[in-house]
Length: 365
Image (tube, rainbow, N blue to C red; front, side):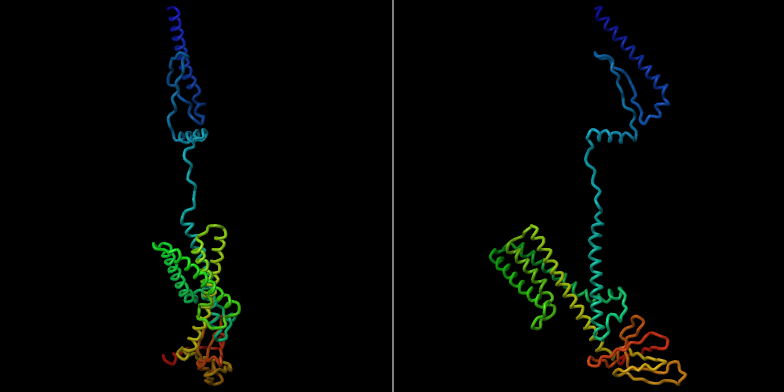
């Protein structure tokens, strides 16, 4: 009993000492309040004590949760390796991909429109013996004049591409496909494609010995190589190796070259056709009366020179029988109303004060 009472007394004494320590700690905290205010985080608050067999163990309670508690918790989880689910990577917005896919084709279309517009205008004015160096068209002029060059070819290309896609879907998804029929169809595609490719190669190298309708010779290389590639795919099946990818790229480049050749020939033919329409309609176009201080000595079929006024007149000579083709680079390009391919005459007059032009309605206006 004595020993037990002694142990209880000792426990009471330890508890008393612990309570004293609590008061001492509280006093120390109060005494050092200014120092604790400068600390980056509040120290834990001592709320009580607990008596165990091993002695008095102080129980600590956490400080009030503040805004920086979340940051501290995240930092502690990162130190323990428990950082939670990974953050989502910052991917580029979808509109950037769409914009990148649109800009490049539109830039290519602008360059093609400029080239085909230049080809069309060069062919048109070459019909009247006017070289491109004599014209000073801006880029916008060639782009505007390329509308009729690109409209029909692009429409035809989109229509044919749609038909090809439909045919491809019909072949590969038909429920009653015959392997033997498919094999013979693949062989036929390869044979016809090789023949078309040779036809286009001969036309590009030295010209065909027989007349061929447009645009068969120009489209033959691209159509031929496309038929051969598709026939080989039907015959052997689809391949995903590097050789298949390289073959696809080369086939695509040959198709693009063939289309470019066809569009160039179409632009040239369209410009020549527009020039023929202008030449056939000269009599119905507005007549240009040219007045000049000095004699211009215009000698062209159907052009008449007349003296007007007296020697003191501002414009002494008048010329009739001319039609305006265009004005470019500060010059007027005029054609005689009786212009013909046998006697081709083009009158170029500078835009200067000593020359005055007057326009009047044509023969049927």
